[in-house]
Length: 271
Image (cartoon, rainbow, N blue to C red):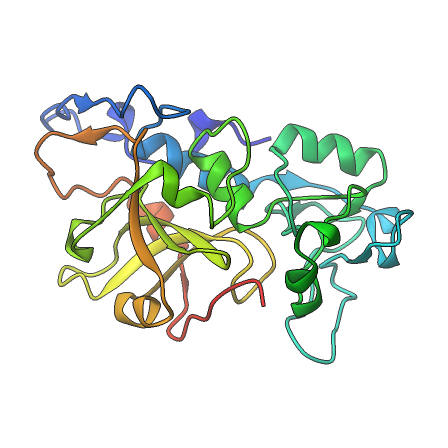
């Protein structure tokens, strides 16, 4: 497993010796269910995006589980008539925890589930969205959009996109977005803001699972106005630490930013 310490986010060890030390952060609201820094949140997002794991044929499922819940793992053999193909390859080391409708696994619980032969992921579909929690398979492992963001915020339990706003404050201006903030559509989808991709704030970096192009968490960059036009609203988690005076510094290192997937025409993930 890639450790948090190995994730390439900006920290004291990554700064040049001549750089001034970062200003201390103002802690988040102590009444929030967790305390997290922007660097923590992005390090966790990167961890989920790059987690190495090895599945086998027994981790593939296309059909009903023992409870009758329809499951489609996003393996490389998954080619639906409509929608996105799968990506992970059995017998090889893959990178990134696969998307799973209703999933809230961390890397350790995911690895145990795969070793036990559970299904590796379960893609979203209009039928699953209509069935909501009734479509969650306990025999599949992975993480969905809100499970992923909840983990990045160190929440003790999952909060879906309709529940996250109760833990957050809305932002009046998108220019106020800071790494670790959320862009959310209640009852639909949520992504984690990771920084500005362009000086004019026209494009953003963000982490997401469930969106194009693959069924797994990834760092992406997209035009902000296109994302806002889909209905996303900017939020700040109350337990997020912050700079007293925003410096505008990137939290992601250049090496991490260079891996961002360019998504010029983003869509709402999780169909």
